Length: 279
Image 1 (cartoon, rainbow, N blue to C red):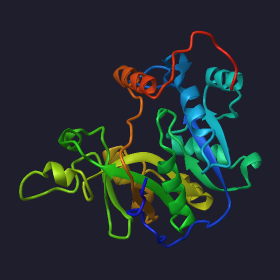
Image 2 (tube, rainbow, N blue to C red):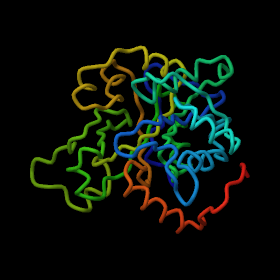
Image 3 (cartoon, rainbow, N blue to C red):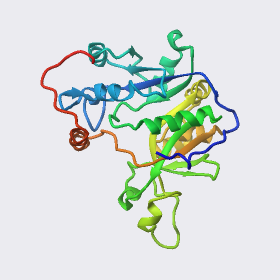
Image 4 (spheres, helix red, strand yellow):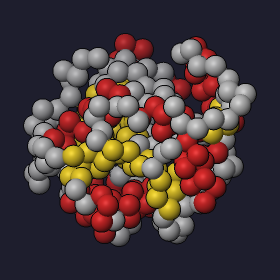
């Protein structure tokens, strides 16, 4: 995939140009729309297993660890050979859970931390590499966006939109249809390119930026939109946004699980009838 549209210059505080990258997969058991989401079966494997198997071989990462608040997820991870850390159960967000693990002595040697959503078993390696690359190029935080494509997504508050500057700096994230086109609705062609962008919820942070993020109090806009990435943005932190190709949606509902299982079949994965250890 061509990342010619990804920003090439960094923000004000600067991220590490070198250093090891730690991928952390937050896996909170409680979920309002999909109970016990990390354990939800797809083709006979728990969702968290699919995610870990997906990211384990990615070359952008030097190590991967699951961060969870429940022993049941620990048990699954240990069975498949996935490194796992049990965290506090009272974290308000996955970012806070990631920071708890990143601060443990075993992970002190990693300068870049990647937040890999525990409900995205179809994450694309080039998207992760783009987010990490932004931090290596000087941004405090790197994330990705993809063209909106469908008009329905503009109206859906569960689809997060992002507006960015020419430099690639995030200007605002919203559940509303930003940017707003005053003179009529965006055409199909317009929705297929910037500035009409859908945010992809993958992040890479310089270590210092991650710790600064979680030390900030919840911000007014964050509370209003229920989007935690508005907290560092309101505080003046720089977030670089790489525009990438299409991205598969995550698993938030039973319908999403059915769709994702079908997609996994299309990719050649067969249902598992017996449980085995990691391969």
